[in-house]
Length: 273
Image (tube, rainbow, N blue to C red; front, side):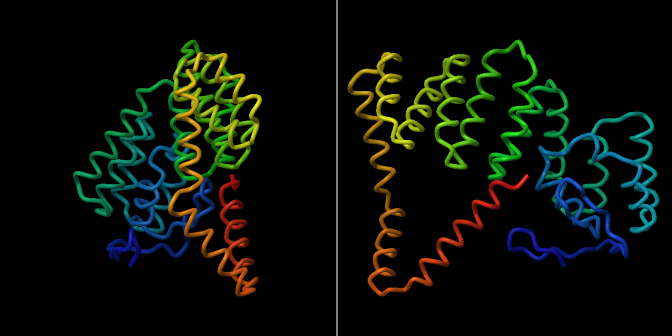
């Protein structure tokens, strides 16, 4: 039985004696259901390297699914697409409902129609969504080393690079990236995010200079300040403040230490590649 979002999923297929090692995730796969789960969780991170003879051999020898392996080899031989390779895997496992499997295959097919630059951005965006900020930063910088003629798209890469830096609390780097984004995409959101980053690093001078140079009205600057103030006084932050006061009043320093260690563990997870 395998767990999927609090559900128990019965593995109907054979379990492998020797696992297939998924290098990208440093993960051992023992069944076709596990492989399908991996595909679902990493759909937009899959690359052509996922299609390889070694996987076909593992499905053939370890899972005993010779017909499926043969079908996959045919996709490789005719230089088929990633969507064509994934479709039989999802169909054979039955791990996802047919309609959901079709949607996943369609999403892969649509992704393959994008430019290499767009696919790279989408991959980095998924890293940000998964809080894998260092991996995202690496991918965004790799894209920025290339020269894409679409300035708005490049600006959006800068924008999301700024979000990745902000996720690591590197607000000075975030502000630089977001300012670079606005210069290319002219998206007001990039400018606002840049101003928020300035506020987070308590750079009042840069905040005022940038807001004034960008033509923000006094009312708009006040609105930005009010939003930042509201975030700093959110209900969640308030509850934590009360909890911290209680720990300190009770001299429960172990609880404070556990909270700090929890934050450290989360940060270490966010900076992993």
